[in-house]
Length: 321
Image (cartoon, rainbow, N blue to C red):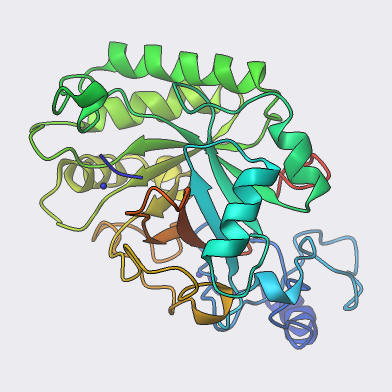
C-alpha cells in the first residue's frame, strides 16, 4: 500500500531451553519478552518466563494457535493487507489469487479514512480465525484523488497531535481494543521533502500511547536517505523508551510485487528480510510487506508477520502481548 536480544537471567535459562524445544512452525511458540530489545529471529524463537514466582508448563501454548498451513517455512505468520473490507468476497479473492488457497493468519486494515474498517469486519475476522493489525492512513499521500502528491502534513507537533487524536477516536469508534497497536502509515511520498520530521514522529507516539494504544510506524526505508529514516533515527538517538516501544512494519523490498496469481502464498514466502532504518534495533521490524498488488483483480498486498508481534487483535477479541 503505497502511493508505494539481553542475556537471559540465569535463573530462567533452563526454562527457556526446555520451552524452546517445544517450538515448531506452528505457533506453539512464545510471546515476546517484556524487554523489547531482546531479538526474536524467525529461525530460533526462544521461550522465556517473565513471572519469577511461577513455573510455566513446557506444554503450555504461549502464543495463540495458528494452523500450520497459515505459517511460512520460516515459522512466520502469513498475511495480507488491504484497503478493501474483510468479507467473504475478499477472502474468496485471497484464496483464489494466492498459491494454496489459504485463509491468511493476519489481515491488515485501516482504522480511518476512505478505507476504514466497516461494521462487522472484526467479527468476520474472529469467525475465520484471522488476527488483525491496524493501520492509520497518512495525510500525505501519492496521487491523492488523482491530483498528484499531497505534502505538508507530517511536519509539526500540532499536526501530529491532531492526527493521533483522530486515530484514537477512530479506533475507539471501530471498537479496536485498548492495547492494540496502531501502525501509522508514513511511507515516502516522492515529491515531499523535509517530512516527515522527528517532531512529528515523537508527538504522534506520545499522544497515541496515552490513548491508550501501542504505536507502530509503517514506513519505507528503501533508501536510507528517506525522510522517514532520518526522522526515526533522530528520535531513536535521544529517546530510549521510544526505541524500545515502537514497532516497525516495512514495505521494502518487494520481491513479489505484481506476482501473477497462484505463484505466491504461505509455502513460497521468502526469508524475512525487510529493509529497516539503519539505526533500528534488529528486533524492531515485525511486519514485512513483501509483495504488492498491481492488478485490479487482486484486492490485497501480501505480508509476513513475526509471531511475537504485539498489539494484534486476536480472533477472540483480545490483544497479543
